[in-house]
Image (cartoon, rainbow, N blue to C red):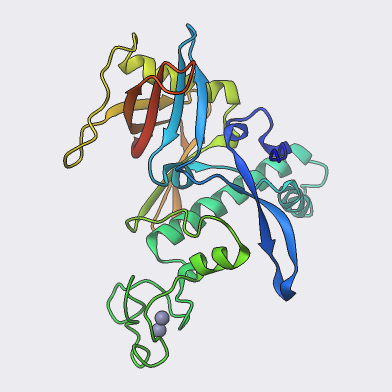
Length: 289
Ligand SMILES: [Zn+2]
Ligand SMILES: [Zn+2]
């Protein structure tokens, strides 16, 4: 079954994402059909450059979940928030402004939520067994990222078996196919491209132009994949005229909400599926501004 076209993603880069259905487990043993993003390992975009070269873009590990952010696909979430904004003094009837503010607020909430999970500081990742926070800095005030709880009186008493993430367990209980889309090293900074902020054609062009800038004639050999940290090609994605397309959070706050570019490290492989000139795998995030 094809995923529904989410109205909020229409004509934006978010429309490039793929979704799959799953049977969501609800309280009381009920279930419903719901949609979740493809895992990073499966996500891929087909991009055609000016000049007609065709690229397949895919993502290493969980890059796409960590760094490609979207507005809530539930239109009603934004509608409710915009409605609440309209109740503020002087905001009645200012529909566009209220809608815009709702999108930004929800976006910031989502970015901080991601950062909280990736940094281990969020309540969302408290231990399922003993409900103590995951943070272990300074020592003794929380749960080690793995192993026993550091809270006095807890370790080995109420938390037998060590840390179990409430976030990850919650996803598994709901029936989502990917338990931990943010798995990996803890991060104190979280950066993203806001796909809904960029028209689909501009996003595709930004990727294609970044590739053409380093490999204009598709003659670069395959990127090395063996050894410790094999070198990557640097792709600079420019979203000129779209301030806010790139955002960053650290220390529990959104620290950049007006970025227009980011740079990623990527691996090239010549060819790909039929009709594809080169496959580019985006491996990691290098910087933004
Ligand atoms: Zn625990
Ligand atoms: Zn504990």
